Image 1 (cartoon, chains in turn cyan, yellow):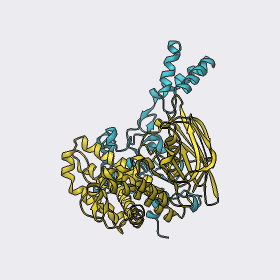
Image 2: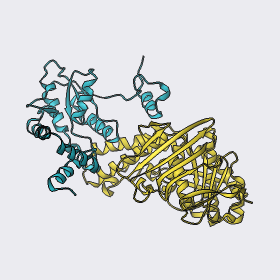
Image 3: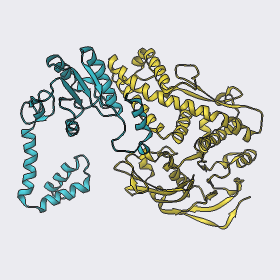
Image 4: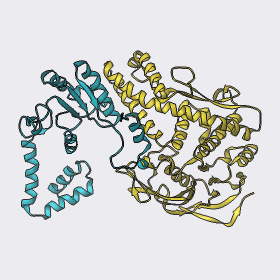
Length: 197
Length: 373
């Protein structure tokens, strides 16, 4: 145990993902040794983030106003929605530069073990959007896990009756890889999702 | 397949250990609690990624340490490879193959294959169907590494479906989604079990005859949870459809009992002797012979399918057997197979091989090079 304020910072940081007691200790003493202004800037950045960041009213991405940058961009295709589990996933899809539509953040995936059912996800908000906006296609980009798959299936069952096209990201071979190195599982999925040439 | 050398760091009772087993038969002798089983457990772990004593990873880490390390040089044909696995208290397992980090520990599966005979193998015959399902699934993993993924997914989907049923909510759309996901992985698991049974059956019949020397015919069957046999030639997709239908039929019962009452997790593999269930009809002796025959058949089947005999581990098996069965088992041990046999009483083991003394955290060669009878 260290002096009260030091230990308090260590305990706070040790609660962050990926940071254990030892790392928390190192960070705390590092912050104690740097210029005071540097440490205060970090504290202010955390405070500012909490003060100034909001959730986009439309897609639930992180935003700094009522709407996020993507929803404000009128050049984007308003008829196609990509559904993701978390805001971080938007960044990944954006990096591909292949998608020019809008997003919808569910806030997780179905997981009864963790008490997460359809009511805990933003699925009602999604059906509202389909009723309100001119949406023709929903691309489901949940993770290829048991929970992500189940969520995708649930969305398909709920949304198809509303008259929109519901698609799921294909899973298959990594680009630039040799067929030799593909594991049996990936290859199996790629075979199941093969395309006509 | 062979283990050329193995080193352990903070694994169970071993602080540090380096051991170069003989490519043939190894007899590991030592008092009870000397650490013989721990050594076999480490080798088996590299193959199956689980302890054959069913303890979680943290149970394998020596007292006081934060992590355990198993390293081994293994060879298959003329290909030698280095495997490294680290188990740590706080974080996930890490594995390296030939010094390059594997994304998933499961990518190690198939690099080294083992079949282990354990003192509690009688459970395979005498106890509930879960033991026999595990046996089939374990053989499946030795044959097709991807089987591990399907089994993990089935288990997860089942736990999710049960958690939903336990919540008491009645929502058919949500339930049907879990049905579909369970059936998808379940179909793959069932089709692999069916193929394992097909592969295992002729070997089991011969292995039983080799040990018992009698005229009884050993066989293995499989009763699906919805009753009735399964078609061995059915595809995973066909099994998936059958599971979906069964889940739909039992929906009311599942809501009421708040758990999944049908599915691959309720199937019953049966070991048969002249057509009757060895679990209920076999004598003590027949059950023991059946347990040995099943392991031996697994070894022969995997050797057959992969073209290479897996490493054979026999943990304190002979002390449980009468003289006739010991002699019969010794005679049926496959040649050209790296074999590791542990015993506290060498006089019980009618097998010749390189002798090692195990104790005080070490494994030392015994005086003479080869002993035995």
